Image (cartoon, rainbow, N blue to C red):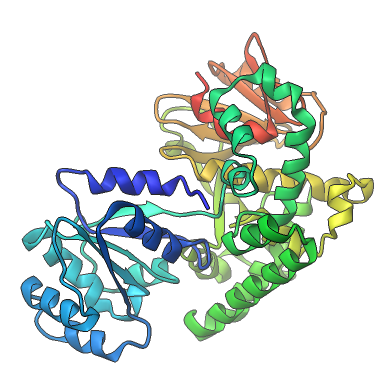
Length: 433
């Protein structure tokens, strides 16, 4: 299975001032596989240490964090010699031994020659939980579910993925139906590696759904196991409300849908917990379009998206035939799935910050506003081939962006100020000028 993150790890390996690397991401997005695969491809040897229920490692890191002593202990434990230039050290479930996280500071300062990558379930929670964390002494890499391009490569459609990268939109439009069919499959399967691998091997949608149900059940168990007891009911309520929140025509999060009289203050910690876990993406509203967009952020108004489009469909009980046959039964939810998909793809693009826009009267809403650093791009999302762009026009008249993008099921087209980018090519927005 191809993951674009491997290339980022290769670049990290060659950095002159390389620091220990922490891979962040939701449970079951493939962090352990990625680290081991990186070790196979780029190093002569790999030493893999799993800290979960590992009393020997807890003891090793409990006392002196002298790096020479730690390396000797890791060699004795693994039965392998650790060579600074040719061995990859993997610390998995590293949050289970907080002192191992603290040790990264000393490896960075006193033994930078060692190549160390770390990951763990709910590591985001551990990093915000008062752990003595080596700020400035580690590098970070975020891992998400497979993007649509990675999905194409996983199911044997590598040439179609290459075509998207080449941006040969004339050729792409000749194969439009192939891309649309694959995109509908992706809406159902999503990008969780286990679901994608199962679909790639067996093409069995029922098996995929069973895997998604197991993943969701594991997330629910994490709520009880790792979240503060008093917050668990609110996390569950909030988590389970996301499909109905996104099914609304205006997908702004409304506390009143959780329960009558619900207030923001009661659910702030629950939202933060789900965000820190990597299970939801919070997209805040902006009320203007200056650079940087963060200066115009409205923290009180936001949309919540799930980590994965396939899991959203599973939570909503969406049947494969409804989705794949293009049934009109779920017109409104098709829009929710499409926005979820677009958000998920945009999150995989580096150096891109995501917001949405509504004016103060609520008469104009642009689904996503993208901050690329020196450029702001408004993006309107259409589930089918509806080509009206009323909100984009209103936004453009007010803020005069260099370009505006509409993404839909229609072919690529560039005319005056508007680029129409097919949904299956949304990752190419990073190349928009």
